[in-house]
Image (cartoon, rainbow, N blue to C red; front, side, top):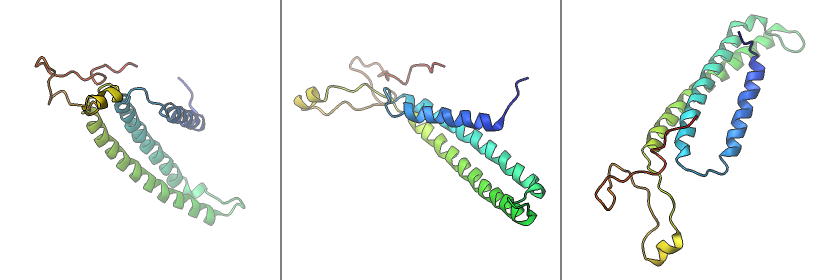
Length: 156
């Protein structure tokens, strides 16, 4: 069985999110945002769980809490105050999950089409290519339009 270290695991999670933030600075395919939202929702749900566990650890061990000078009363106040702030964080993570879930639904409905040459489109008097949803539009042959990136299976 693998041994775990919560502090080490939290550091690994923070580093993974740092790498994600860095990789999102240049996004090559906007269709990737759907999968990022999906995974962010999972991350937020797990953060909610971990925060609930940290909150319980503070609440369940309040009798062990002391301040730096060894005084019980201030240590317990700190622990119970931390419990309240962690409770608020759990609530916010729950709300963030709901928002991400809604965003995921809307993002999943987008059919991303490749960009066109804006100079050629402007010269011809036509607007720049717009994303269309395949359920609502057909190509010139009358067949349903096929979105470029949305149909690709997620590779993991």
